[in-house]
Image (tube, rainbow, N blue to C red):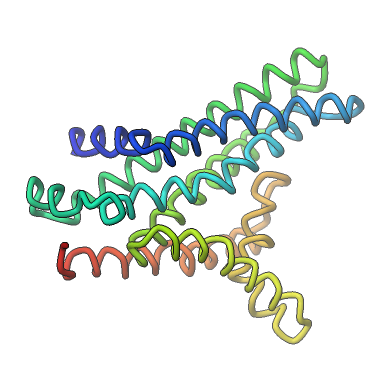
Length: 233
């Protein structure tokens, strides 16, 4: 598993798309913190800076996760991969572990940029352990949602389109008063967005759990079944 994870980490940066996406995430994170501290110089805390810093990761990391899985088919390496490693589920597990490590690295980078920027600006360095933990949940689940969607669809373009279109469609439907009560349980914008802002209540955590079951656990389970049972070409 250690070797497989190392291979998947290398795959995440071997392609031009994966490399530039991760570089763009780092660059936009830095720019977001600099702009925040330049525009709002009064009352900005470390927690505020970190909330802004992780937003690029929340948008771009799912695409990295999608490409990490779908590149087996788009780059036509699936046959080689599963010839060398006939047991398919350990390969998917390695992709999940690699995705978690990438998301944790992105979180550490966001925290470092936020701490440095806040310190240089002379602003309040307040950051609670609860918010930090929620930020980790935010980035890791964003990455894993991409992996799950990639495993489910196994094609880059449809998975990337779905990663943007499906949440927007749910958010639009949730704006209808008759549907709001039900769809708030799976509306990513309403349930996962607050993870970076305030300490969540028990009800809000229930919303997060339901959302992750719908957008992460179920697609990943179906994707794992497709990978285990499907024909590799």
